[in-house]
Figure 1: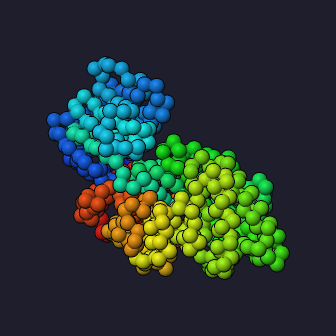
Figure 2: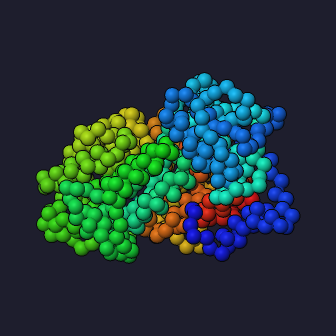
Figure 3: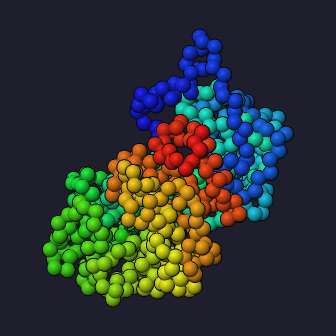
Length: 531
Ligand code: IFG
Protein backbone atom coordinates (compact mmCIF):
# COMPACT_ATOMS: atom_id res chain seq x y z
CA UNK A 1 0.00 0.00 0.00
CA UNK A 2 1.10 3.62 -0.51
CA UNK A 3 4.36 4.09 1.46
CA UNK A 4 7.69 5.87 1.22
CA UNK A 5 8.75 4.85 -2.33
CA UNK A 6 11.83 2.67 -2.64
CA UNK A 7 14.13 3.15 -5.64
CA UNK A 8 12.38 0.40 -7.62
CA UNK A 9 9.03 1.92 -6.91
CA UNK A 10 10.31 5.36 -7.91
CA UNK A 11 11.56 3.95 -11.21
CA UNK A 12 8.29 2.08 -11.77
CA UNK A 13 6.22 5.14 -11.02
CA UNK A 14 8.49 7.37 -13.09
CA UNK A 15 8.20 4.93 -16.00
CA UNK A 16 4.45 5.19 -15.75
CA UNK A 17 4.48 8.96 -15.43
CA UNK A 18 7.20 9.45 -18.07
CA UNK A 19 4.90 11.04 -20.68
CA UNK A 20 4.01 13.65 -18.09
CA UNK A 21 7.32 13.96 -16.28
CA UNK A 22 9.36 14.92 -19.39
CA UNK A 23 7.15 16.98 -21.71
CA UNK A 24 10.24 18.13 -23.62
CA UNK A 25 10.74 14.68 -25.10
CA UNK A 26 8.02 13.31 -27.41
CA UNK A 27 5.46 11.70 -25.11
CA UNK A 28 5.98 7.96 -25.10
CA UNK A 29 2.80 6.58 -26.62
CA UNK A 30 0.80 4.94 -23.85
CA UNK A 31 0.60 1.20 -24.43
CA UNK A 32 -2.62 0.41 -26.32
CA UNK A 33 -5.40 0.02 -23.79
CA UNK A 34 -5.85 -3.72 -23.36
CA UNK A 35 -9.24 -4.78 -24.58
CA UNK A 36 -10.93 -5.01 -21.23
CA UNK A 37 -14.08 -7.11 -21.10
CA UNK A 38 -17.04 -6.76 -18.77
CA UNK A 39 -16.23 -10.28 -17.60
CA UNK A 40 -12.66 -9.43 -16.55
CA UNK A 41 -13.83 -8.39 -13.09
CA UNK A 42 -12.94 -10.20 -9.84
CA UNK A 43 -15.21 -11.52 -8.35
CA UNK A 44 -16.70 -12.79 -11.64
CA UNK A 45 -20.07 -11.07 -12.20
CA UNK A 46 -23.20 -13.22 -12.48
CA UNK A 47 -24.24 -11.98 -15.93
CA UNK A 48 -22.52 -9.78 -18.53
CA UNK A 49 -23.94 -8.65 -21.85
CA UNK A 50 -21.21 -6.80 -23.81
CA UNK A 51 -22.22 -4.14 -26.32
CA UNK A 52 -19.26 -2.81 -28.29
CA UNK A 53 -21.32 0.17 -29.47
CA UNK A 54 -21.66 1.28 -25.86
CA UNK A 55 -18.04 1.98 -25.04
CA UNK A 56 -17.94 5.01 -22.77
CA UNK A 57 -14.99 7.38 -22.38
CA UNK A 58 -14.67 9.42 -19.22
CA UNK A 59 -13.68 13.00 -19.96
CA UNK A 60 -13.23 16.30 -18.10
CA UNK A 61 -16.93 17.08 -18.48
CA UNK A 62 -18.11 13.87 -16.85
CA UNK A 63 -20.25 14.35 -13.77
CA UNK A 64 -21.27 11.89 -11.08
CA UNK A 65 -24.96 11.98 -10.26
CA UNK A 66 -26.53 10.31 -7.25
CA UNK A 67 -30.06 9.32 -6.30
CA UNK A 68 -31.86 12.41 -5.01
CA UNK A 69 -32.52 12.47 -1.26
CA UNK A 70 -30.09 9.66 -0.46
CA UNK A 71 -27.12 10.66 1.70
CA UNK A 72 -25.80 7.11 1.45
CA UNK A 73 -25.81 7.23 -2.36
CA UNK A 74 -24.18 10.66 -2.18
CA UNK A 75 -21.41 9.18 -0.01
CA UNK A 76 -20.83 6.39 -2.55
CA UNK A 77 -20.63 9.07 -5.25
CA UNK A 78 -17.99 11.00 -3.31
CA UNK A 79 -16.01 7.84 -2.68
CA UNK A 80 -16.08 7.09 -6.40
CA UNK A 81 -14.95 10.65 -7.18
CA UNK A 82 -12.10 10.30 -4.66
CA UNK A 83 -11.05 7.10 -6.41
CA UNK A 84 -11.18 8.48 -9.96
CA UNK A 85 -9.91 12.06 -9.53
CA UNK A 86 -6.17 11.47 -8.84
CA UNK A 87 -5.37 9.50 -12.02
CA UNK A 88 -7.77 11.34 -14.35
CA UNK A 89 -7.22 14.83 -13.00
CA UNK A 90 -10.89 15.46 -13.80
CA UNK A 91 -13.16 17.50 -11.47
CA UNK A 92 -15.89 14.82 -11.49
CA UNK A 93 -18.40 16.87 -9.48
CA UNK A 94 -20.96 14.90 -7.48
CA UNK A 95 -24.42 16.28 -8.20
CA UNK A 96 -28.05 15.26 -7.69
CA UNK A 97 -29.74 13.56 -10.61
CA UNK A 98 -30.61 16.16 -13.25
CA UNK A 99 -31.48 15.85 -16.92
CA UNK A 100 -28.57 17.39 -18.78
CA UNK A 101 -26.68 16.21 -21.87
CA UNK A 102 -23.43 15.96 -19.91
CA UNK A 103 -21.72 12.55 -19.91
CA UNK A 104 -22.35 11.05 -16.51
CA UNK A 105 -21.90 8.26 -14.02
CA UNK A 106 -25.27 7.87 -12.33
CA UNK A 107 -25.74 6.03 -9.02
CA UNK A 108 -29.45 5.32 -8.63
CA UNK A 109 -31.50 3.57 -5.96
CA UNK A 110 -34.29 1.42 -7.40
CA UNK A 111 -35.08 0.35 -10.93
CA UNK A 112 -32.55 -2.49 -11.01
CA UNK A 113 -33.22 -6.01 -12.19
CA UNK A 114 -35.09 -7.81 -9.38
CA UNK A 115 -32.32 -10.40 -9.08
CA UNK A 116 -29.84 -7.91 -7.58
CA UNK A 117 -31.40 -8.19 -4.11
CA UNK A 118 -29.88 -6.30 -1.17
CA UNK A 119 -26.19 -6.53 -2.09
CA UNK A 120 -26.18 -6.66 -5.89
CA UNK A 121 -26.34 -4.05 -8.64
CA UNK A 122 -27.09 -3.49 -12.30
CA UNK A 123 -24.43 -1.63 -14.28
CA UNK A 124 -25.18 -0.23 -17.73
CA UNK A 125 -22.50 1.33 -19.95
CA UNK A 126 -23.47 3.30 -23.07
CA UNK A 127 -21.60 5.93 -25.08
CA UNK A 128 -23.40 8.55 -22.94
CA UNK A 129 -22.29 7.24 -19.61
CA UNK A 130 -22.48 4.65 -16.86
CA UNK A 131 -25.57 3.93 -14.80
CA UNK A 132 -25.39 1.83 -11.65
CA UNK A 133 -28.71 0.82 -10.12
CA UNK A 134 -29.16 -0.98 -6.79
CA UNK A 135 -31.61 -1.32 -3.93
CA UNK A 136 -29.06 -0.27 -1.31
CA UNK A 137 -25.97 1.91 -0.99
CA UNK A 138 -23.98 -1.29 -0.43
CA UNK A 139 -25.12 -2.47 -3.86
CA UNK A 140 -24.13 0.86 -5.41
CA UNK A 141 -20.74 0.60 -3.71
CA UNK A 142 -20.28 -2.92 -5.11
CA UNK A 143 -21.10 -1.57 -8.57
CA UNK A 144 -18.50 1.18 -8.23
CA UNK A 145 -15.83 -1.44 -7.38
CA UNK A 146 -16.74 -3.22 -10.62
CA UNK A 147 -16.55 0.08 -12.53
CA UNK A 148 -13.11 0.69 -11.02
CA UNK A 149 -11.90 -2.62 -12.51
CA UNK A 150 -13.52 -1.87 -15.90
CA UNK A 151 -11.38 1.28 -16.25
CA UNK A 152 -7.72 0.96 -17.37
CA UNK A 153 -5.35 -0.14 -14.59
CA UNK A 154 -3.71 3.31 -14.58
CA UNK A 155 -6.84 4.53 -12.78
CA UNK A 156 -5.03 3.36 -9.64
CA UNK A 157 -2.16 5.82 -10.13
CA UNK A 158 -1.74 8.51 -7.50
CA UNK A 159 -1.01 11.19 -10.13
CA UNK A 160 -2.60 12.28 -13.43
CA UNK A 161 -2.07 9.84 -16.27
CA UNK A 162 -2.41 10.37 -19.99
CA UNK A 163 -4.82 7.49 -20.48
CA UNK A 164 -7.98 7.28 -22.55
CA UNK A 165 -10.41 6.32 -19.83
CA UNK A 166 -12.59 3.86 -21.70
CA UNK A 167 -15.18 1.57 -20.12
CA UNK A 168 -16.41 -1.38 -22.23
CA UNK A 169 -20.08 -1.05 -23.22
CA UNK A 170 -22.89 -3.33 -22.16
CA UNK A 171 -24.81 -4.49 -19.10
CA UNK A 172 -23.83 -6.35 -15.92
CA UNK A 173 -26.38 -7.90 -13.58
CA UNK A 174 -24.56 -8.98 -10.41
CA UNK A 175 -25.33 -10.27 -6.92
CA UNK A 176 -23.52 -12.44 -4.39
CA UNK A 177 -23.87 -16.22 -3.95
CA UNK A 178 -23.28 -15.87 -0.20
CA UNK A 179 -24.30 -12.94 2.03
CA UNK A 180 -21.08 -13.18 4.06
CA UNK A 181 -17.64 -12.70 2.48
CA UNK A 182 -15.15 -12.08 5.29
CA UNK A 183 -11.50 -11.56 6.10
CA UNK A 184 -9.94 -11.95 9.56
CA UNK A 185 -6.90 -10.11 10.89
CA UNK A 186 -5.14 -11.34 14.06
CA UNK A 187 -4.06 -8.30 16.11
CA UNK A 188 -3.06 -10.38 19.15
CA UNK A 189 0.06 -12.26 18.09
CA UNK A 190 1.44 -9.15 16.45
CA UNK A 191 -0.38 -5.85 16.81
CA UNK A 192 -1.28 -3.92 13.64
CA UNK A 193 -1.98 -0.20 13.74
CA UNK A 194 -5.15 1.59 12.67
CA UNK A 195 -3.37 2.74 9.49
CA UNK A 196 -2.40 -0.84 8.62
CA UNK A 197 -5.93 -2.11 9.32
CA UNK A 198 -7.58 0.64 7.24
CA UNK A 199 -5.12 0.06 4.39
CA UNK A 200 -6.14 -3.61 4.43
CA UNK A 201 -9.82 -2.59 4.50
CA UNK A 202 -9.28 -0.48 1.36
CA UNK A 203 -7.94 -3.52 -0.46
CA UNK A 204 -10.63 -5.89 0.84
CA UNK A 205 -13.41 -3.56 -0.34
CA UNK A 206 -12.15 -3.73 -3.93
CA UNK A 207 -13.12 -7.43 -4.00
CA UNK A 208 -16.57 -7.01 -2.40
CA UNK A 209 -15.52 -8.40 0.99
CA UNK A 210 -18.21 -7.20 3.41
CA UNK A 211 -17.07 -8.41 6.86
CA UNK A 212 -13.83 -7.83 8.78
CA UNK A 213 -13.30 -10.13 11.76
CA UNK A 214 -10.72 -8.70 14.19
CA UNK A 215 -9.04 -11.28 16.46
CA UNK A 216 -8.47 -8.88 19.39
CA UNK A 217 -7.32 -11.12 22.25
CA UNK A 218 -5.20 -14.23 22.68
CA UNK A 219 -2.47 -15.76 24.86
CA UNK A 220 0.23 -13.35 23.70
CA UNK A 221 -1.67 -10.06 23.72
CA UNK A 222 -4.90 -8.21 24.60
CA UNK A 223 -5.46 -5.50 22.00
CA UNK A 224 -8.72 -3.71 22.82
CA UNK A 225 -9.25 -1.18 25.62
CA UNK A 226 -11.71 -2.30 28.31
CA UNK A 227 -12.42 0.53 30.81
CA UNK A 228 -13.52 -1.75 33.65
CA UNK A 229 -10.32 -3.85 33.36
CA UNK A 230 -7.71 -1.24 32.29
CA UNK A 231 -4.60 -3.38 32.77
CA UNK A 232 -5.79 -5.72 30.00
CA UNK A 233 -4.25 -3.26 27.52
CA UNK A 234 -1.70 -1.34 29.55
CA UNK A 235 -0.15 -4.66 30.66
CA UNK A 236 -1.76 -7.35 28.47
CA UNK A 237 -1.16 -5.17 25.42
CA UNK A 238 1.89 -3.43 26.80
CA UNK A 239 5.63 -3.54 26.14
CA UNK A 240 7.07 -6.98 25.45
CA UNK A 241 3.75 -8.54 24.50
CA UNK A 242 3.12 -10.54 21.34
CA UNK A 243 4.97 -13.40 19.71
CA UNK A 244 8.73 -13.00 20.46
CA UNK A 245 7.76 -9.97 22.57
CA UNK A 246 7.60 -7.91 19.43
CA UNK A 247 6.01 -5.07 21.20
CA UNK A 248 3.17 -3.11 22.67
CA UNK A 249 0.06 -2.13 20.90
CA UNK A 250 -3.64 -1.96 21.41
CA UNK A 251 -6.72 -0.24 20.02
CA UNK A 252 -8.20 2.42 22.25
CA UNK A 253 -11.96 2.65 21.93
CA UNK A 254 -11.43 5.70 19.72
CA UNK A 255 -9.09 3.67 17.48
CA UNK A 256 -11.66 0.87 17.30
CA UNK A 257 -14.42 3.36 16.40
CA UNK A 258 -12.18 4.79 13.67
CA UNK A 259 -11.64 1.32 12.20
CA UNK A 260 -15.38 0.56 12.40
CA UNK A 261 -16.20 3.84 10.65
CA UNK A 262 -13.59 3.35 7.92
CA UNK A 263 -14.95 -0.15 7.29
CA UNK A 264 -18.59 0.98 7.35
CA UNK A 265 -17.86 3.69 4.76
CA UNK A 266 -16.79 0.82 2.49
CA UNK A 267 -19.80 -1.28 3.46
CA UNK A 268 -17.70 -3.64 5.56
CA UNK A 269 -19.04 -4.69 8.98
CA UNK A 270 -16.54 -5.29 11.80
CA UNK A 271 -16.87 -8.44 13.94
CA UNK A 272 -14.78 -8.30 17.15
CA UNK A 273 -13.49 -11.57 18.60
CA UNK A 274 -12.78 -12.06 22.30
CA UNK A 275 -11.40 -15.60 22.35
CA UNK A 276 -12.51 -17.72 25.34
CA UNK A 277 -12.43 -19.87 27.45
CA UNK A 278 -9.03 -20.74 25.94
CA UNK A 279 -6.41 -18.46 24.37
CA UNK A 280 -6.68 -16.27 27.51
CA UNK A 281 -3.14 -16.06 28.91
CA UNK A 282 -2.79 -12.32 28.22
CA UNK A 283 -5.78 -11.63 30.50
CA UNK A 284 -4.82 -14.19 33.13
CA UNK A 285 -1.16 -13.15 33.30
CA UNK A 286 -2.42 -9.57 33.82
CA UNK A 287 -5.09 -10.24 36.47
CA UNK A 288 -4.10 -12.97 38.97
CA UNK A 289 -7.66 -13.09 40.28
CA UNK A 290 -8.78 -14.53 36.93
CA UNK A 291 -6.89 -17.75 37.72
CA UNK A 292 -8.40 -20.57 39.78
CA UNK A 293 -5.36 -20.61 42.09
CA UNK A 294 -5.13 -16.79 42.20
CA UNK A 295 -1.64 -16.95 40.73
CA UNK A 296 -0.91 -15.11 37.51
CA UNK A 297 0.95 -17.28 34.97
CA UNK A 298 3.88 -15.60 33.19
CA UNK A 299 3.19 -13.69 29.98
CA UNK A 300 3.72 -15.81 26.89
CA UNK A 301 5.63 -14.78 23.75
CA UNK A 302 5.85 -18.19 22.09
CA UNK A 303 3.50 -19.69 19.49
CA UNK A 304 2.05 -22.60 21.47
CA UNK A 305 -1.74 -22.92 21.73
CA UNK A 306 -4.25 -24.77 23.93
CA UNK A 307 -2.63 -24.36 27.38
CA UNK A 308 -4.84 -21.64 28.91
CA UNK A 309 -8.37 -21.62 30.34
CA UNK A 310 -10.47 -19.14 32.28
CA UNK A 311 -11.53 -20.41 35.72
CA UNK A 312 -14.90 -21.96 34.92
CA UNK A 313 -16.14 -22.43 38.50
CA UNK A 314 -15.30 -18.88 39.66
CA UNK A 315 -18.08 -16.24 39.59
CA UNK A 316 -15.49 -13.53 38.93
CA UNK A 317 -14.89 -15.08 35.52
CA UNK A 318 -18.46 -14.35 34.48
CA UNK A 319 -18.31 -10.76 35.78
CA UNK A 320 -15.14 -10.32 33.74
CA UNK A 321 -16.71 -11.87 30.63
CA UNK A 322 -19.88 -9.80 30.98
CA UNK A 323 -17.89 -6.57 31.47
CA UNK A 324 -15.89 -7.30 28.32
CA UNK A 325 -18.91 -8.31 26.22
CA UNK A 326 -20.88 -5.27 27.41
CA UNK A 327 -18.11 -2.80 26.55
CA UNK A 328 -17.29 -4.37 23.17
CA UNK A 329 -20.95 -4.65 22.16
CA UNK A 330 -21.46 -0.97 23.01
CA UNK A 331 -18.85 0.12 20.42
CA UNK A 332 -19.77 -2.45 17.78
CA UNK A 333 -22.63 -1.40 15.45
CA UNK A 334 -22.56 -4.73 13.59
CA UNK A 335 -24.85 -7.62 14.53
CA UNK A 336 -22.15 -10.17 15.40
CA UNK A 337 -19.80 -10.73 18.34
CA UNK A 338 -17.29 -13.62 18.09
CA UNK A 339 -16.45 -15.39 21.36
CA UNK A 340 -13.82 -17.73 19.96
CA UNK A 341 -14.13 -21.12 21.69
CA UNK A 342 -11.27 -22.76 19.80
CA UNK A 343 -8.52 -25.04 21.17
CA UNK A 344 -9.86 -25.07 24.74
CA UNK A 345 -7.63 -28.04 25.50
CA UNK A 346 -7.11 -26.91 29.11
CA UNK A 347 -10.88 -26.86 29.74
CA UNK A 348 -12.78 -30.11 30.36
CA UNK A 349 -15.69 -30.80 28.00
CA UNK A 350 -18.08 -30.45 30.94
CA UNK A 351 -16.56 -27.10 31.97
CA UNK A 352 -16.60 -25.93 28.34
CA UNK A 353 -20.32 -26.68 28.14
CA UNK A 354 -20.94 -24.93 31.48
CA UNK A 355 -18.98 -21.89 30.32
CA UNK A 356 -20.70 -21.58 26.95
CA UNK A 357 -24.15 -22.06 28.44
CA UNK A 358 -23.49 -19.09 30.75
CA UNK A 359 -21.72 -16.87 28.22
CA UNK A 360 -23.81 -17.29 25.07
CA UNK A 361 -26.85 -15.66 26.77
CA UNK A 362 -24.61 -12.68 27.65
CA UNK A 363 -23.93 -12.08 23.94
CA UNK A 364 -27.69 -11.99 23.33
CA UNK A 365 -28.24 -9.81 26.44
CA UNK A 366 -26.11 -7.10 24.86
CA UNK A 367 -27.93 -7.33 21.55
CA UNK A 368 -25.48 -9.35 19.51
CA UNK A 369 -25.58 -12.65 17.63
CA UNK A 370 -22.74 -14.99 18.63
CA UNK A 371 -20.07 -16.37 16.33
CA UNK A 372 -17.81 -19.17 17.53
CA UNK A 373 -15.13 -21.41 16.02
CA UNK A 374 -16.75 -24.73 15.15
CA UNK A 375 -15.85 -26.40 18.49
CA UNK A 376 -18.70 -24.35 19.97
CA UNK A 377 -21.16 -26.66 18.21
CA UNK A 378 -20.38 -29.41 20.75
CA UNK A 379 -22.61 -27.59 23.27
CA UNK A 380 -25.65 -27.61 20.94
CA UNK A 381 -25.94 -23.80 21.08
CA UNK A 382 -29.08 -21.84 20.06
CA UNK A 383 -29.62 -22.04 16.30
CA UNK A 384 -28.79 -18.35 15.77
CA UNK A 385 -25.15 -19.01 16.81
CA UNK A 386 -22.88 -19.03 13.76
CA UNK A 387 -20.16 -21.68 13.52
CA UNK A 388 -16.92 -20.74 11.81
CA UNK A 389 -15.43 -23.94 10.40
CA UNK A 390 -11.62 -24.03 10.46
CA UNK A 391 -11.05 -27.77 10.18
CA UNK A 392 -9.03 -29.38 7.40
CA UNK A 393 -11.27 -32.44 7.02
CA UNK A 394 -14.44 -33.07 5.04
CA UNK A 395 -16.52 -34.44 7.94
CA UNK A 396 -17.49 -32.99 11.32
CA UNK A 397 -20.42 -34.60 13.12
CA UNK A 398 -21.12 -31.70 15.52
CA UNK A 399 -21.10 -29.24 12.62
CA UNK A 400 -23.36 -31.36 10.41
CA UNK A 401 -25.84 -31.88 13.29
CA UNK A 402 -25.83 -28.14 14.01
CA UNK A 403 -26.40 -27.35 10.34
CA UNK A 404 -29.31 -29.80 10.32
CA UNK A 405 -30.75 -27.97 13.35
CA UNK A 406 -30.48 -24.63 11.56
CA UNK A 407 -27.17 -23.14 12.70
CA UNK A 408 -25.43 -21.24 9.90
CA UNK A 409 -21.79 -21.90 8.99
CA UNK A 410 -18.98 -19.64 7.76
CA UNK A 411 -16.44 -21.76 5.88
CA UNK A 412 -12.75 -21.10 6.64
CA UNK A 413 -11.08 -24.50 6.11
CA UNK A 414 -7.48 -24.04 7.30
CA UNK A 415 -6.05 -25.96 4.33
CA UNK A 416 -7.90 -23.74 1.84
CA UNK A 417 -8.63 -20.32 3.36
CA UNK A 418 -5.95 -19.71 6.01
CA UNK A 419 -3.86 -16.90 4.51
CA UNK A 420 -1.13 -17.44 7.13
CA UNK A 421 -0.25 -20.74 5.49
CA UNK A 422 2.92 -20.66 3.41
CA UNK A 423 2.43 -20.76 -0.38
CA UNK A 424 5.12 -23.41 -0.58
CA UNK A 425 8.09 -24.55 1.57
CA UNK A 426 10.17 -21.57 0.39
CA UNK A 427 7.74 -18.88 1.63
CA UNK A 428 9.58 -16.65 4.11
CA UNK A 429 6.47 -15.89 6.20
CA UNK A 430 3.66 -18.04 7.53
CA UNK A 431 3.07 -21.47 9.01
CA UNK A 432 2.44 -24.83 7.38
CA UNK A 433 0.60 -26.98 9.96
CA UNK A 434 -2.58 -27.15 7.84
CA UNK A 435 -1.12 -27.18 4.32
CA UNK A 436 0.93 -25.30 1.80
CA UNK A 437 -1.67 -23.16 0.00
CA UNK A 438 -0.78 -21.96 -3.50
CA UNK A 439 -3.28 -19.76 -5.31
CA UNK A 440 -5.01 -22.61 -7.04
CA UNK A 441 -5.49 -24.45 -3.70
CA UNK A 442 -7.23 -21.35 -2.33
CA UNK A 443 -9.47 -21.15 -5.40
CA UNK A 444 -10.28 -24.70 -6.44
CA UNK A 445 -12.79 -25.78 -3.83
CA UNK A 446 -16.54 -25.41 -3.28
CA UNK A 447 -17.65 -24.13 0.14
CA UNK A 448 -20.98 -25.99 -0.21
CA UNK A 449 -19.25 -29.32 -0.83
CA UNK A 450 -16.43 -29.09 1.69
CA UNK A 451 -18.04 -30.71 4.74
CA UNK A 452 -20.53 -33.56 4.53
CA UNK A 453 -23.94 -32.39 5.67
CA UNK A 454 -23.07 -28.69 5.36
CA UNK A 455 -24.62 -27.64 2.05
CA UNK A 456 -25.48 -24.39 0.30
CA UNK A 457 -28.45 -23.53 2.54
CA UNK A 458 -26.45 -23.96 5.76
CA UNK A 459 -23.62 -21.71 4.62
CA UNK A 460 -23.71 -18.01 5.51
CA UNK A 461 -20.49 -17.51 3.54
CA UNK A 462 -16.71 -17.76 3.55
CA UNK A 463 -13.89 -16.05 5.42
CA UNK A 464 -10.11 -15.83 4.92
CA UNK A 465 -8.33 -15.68 8.33
CA UNK A 466 -4.83 -14.16 8.53
CA UNK A 467 -3.11 -15.14 11.79
CA UNK A 468 -0.15 -12.96 12.69
CA UNK A 469 2.35 -15.18 14.52
CA UNK A 470 4.86 -14.57 11.71
CA UNK A 471 3.65 -11.21 10.38
CA UNK A 472 4.97 -7.79 11.44
CA UNK A 473 4.15 -5.20 8.75
CA UNK A 474 1.54 -4.20 6.18
CA UNK A 475 3.85 -5.62 3.51
CA UNK A 476 3.68 -8.96 5.32
CA UNK A 477 -0.14 -8.78 5.41
CA UNK A 478 -0.26 -7.94 1.69
CA UNK A 479 2.22 -10.67 0.73
CA UNK A 480 0.12 -13.37 2.40
CA UNK A 481 -3.27 -11.98 1.41
CA UNK A 482 -2.52 -11.24 -2.25
CA UNK A 483 -3.26 -13.03 -4.51
CA UNK A 484 -5.20 -15.55 -2.39
CA UNK A 485 -7.75 -13.17 -0.80
CA UNK A 486 -9.36 -12.42 -4.21
CA UNK A 487 -9.72 -16.19 -4.68
CA UNK A 488 -11.75 -16.50 -1.47
CA UNK A 489 -13.68 -13.35 -2.37
CA UNK A 490 -14.68 -14.90 -5.69
CA UNK A 491 -15.76 -18.15 -3.98
CA UNK A 492 -17.99 -16.05 -1.73
CA UNK A 493 -19.52 -13.87 -4.44
CA UNK A 494 -19.57 -15.67 -7.80
CA UNK A 495 -21.68 -18.57 -9.03
CA UNK A 496 -20.45 -22.14 -9.14
CA UNK A 497 -21.09 -22.16 -12.90
CA UNK A 498 -18.56 -19.32 -13.36
CA UNK A 499 -15.95 -21.16 -11.24
CA UNK A 500 -13.04 -21.81 -13.61
CA UNK A 501 -9.33 -21.77 -12.71
CA UNK A 502 -8.14 -20.83 -16.21
CA UNK A 503 -10.49 -17.84 -16.28
CA UNK A 504 -9.63 -16.82 -12.71
CA UNK A 505 -5.84 -17.04 -13.14
CA UNK A 506 -6.05 -14.87 -16.26
CA UNK A 507 -8.24 -12.27 -14.57
CA UNK A 508 -5.96 -12.39 -11.53
CA UNK A 509 -2.87 -11.77 -13.67
CA UNK A 510 -4.49 -8.62 -15.02
CA UNK A 511 -4.82 -7.26 -11.45
CA UNK A 512 -1.03 -6.96 -11.12
CA UNK A 513 -0.70 -3.49 -12.75
CA UNK A 514 -3.36 -2.23 -10.30
CA UNK A 515 -1.55 -3.74 -7.30
CA UNK A 516 1.80 -2.34 -8.45
CA UNK A 517 0.27 1.14 -8.65
CA UNK A 518 -1.31 0.70 -5.22
CA UNK A 519 2.09 -0.59 -4.01
CA UNK A 520 0.57 -3.85 -2.84
CA UNK A 521 3.44 -6.18 -1.97
CA UNK A 522 1.85 -9.26 -3.51
CA UNK A 523 3.34 -12.73 -4.00
CA UNK A 524 3.98 -13.25 -7.74
CA UNK A 525 2.79 -16.84 -7.81
CA UNK A 526 4.26 -18.92 -10.68
CA UNK A 527 0.73 -20.27 -11.23
CA UNK A 528 -0.52 -16.90 -12.53
CA UNK A 529 0.20 -15.18 -15.89
CA UNK A 530 1.00 -11.73 -14.43
CA UNK A 531 0.61 -8.88 -16.94
N1 IFG B 1 -5.03 -22.29 15.13
C1 IFG B 1 -5.47 -21.31 16.13
C2 IFG B 1 -5.09 -19.87 15.87
C3 IFG B 1 -3.75 -19.71 15.16
C4 IFG B 1 -3.72 -20.59 13.93
C5 IFG B 1 -2.48 -20.33 13.09
C6 IFG B 1 -7.67 -21.30 15.05
C7 IFG B 1 -9.17 -21.17 15.20
C8 IFG B 1 -3.81 -22.03 14.38
N2 IFG B 1 -6.94 -21.36 16.20
O1 IFG B 1 -7.17 -21.31 13.94
O2 IFG B 1 -5.06 -19.16 17.10
O3 IFG B 1 -2.69 -19.99 16.03
O4 IFG B 1 -2.58 -20.92 11.83
